[in-house]
Length: 246
Image (cartoon, rainbow, N blue to C red):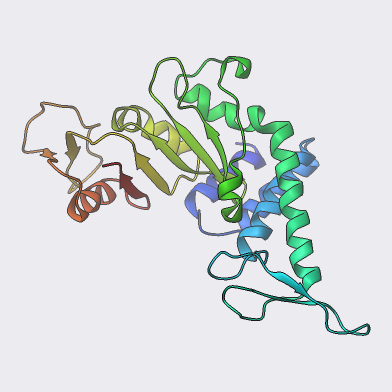
């Protein structure tokens, strides 16, 4: 096992920790991938502290405090004081840099998951990969594939430098979840279709992949989207938060 593989395993084992991610960024830097390393560092920094918006999501206005004072900020809607203006500008610059890195390397960084889930090996055959400006404050860069020819519709989001969120059909999640979770620190899944059957939390070992029509001693029929449904999904896949489209 290479040092890079060992660091990836550490990230999967401790997805909430920044240290393994930053150590992996250092390894990438030393092994010819400086842009990927920088992207991880920038996203980690922005996730730790992002000061461009007030707590309610409104942009700060610059407030001059005199010729010998550092400009401050104020939210015109909430009427609260904010961070210094240079701090806001620094975070805006970090976000701009993250977007530049993403625009230049999105196909390369998204390719492993796309191919894993059955997309063509050549990124040129995918739909365009873009960053959604409406979600920029969260610093999740999104690869929308809802226009993909097979009609499946799948999305994945980068957070803190790695794919942490996946949106897909229940069928695709059941088909690929083993491989996805073995390679990416996924912590959130949005199922775009309702699972007809979801495996009960196993009492020992790992339950089989859910299949429609199996023995009801092992599978639960979900009739509606409720808190209990999500609880059963999250019991089946510990460490993952689920949402199910209505």
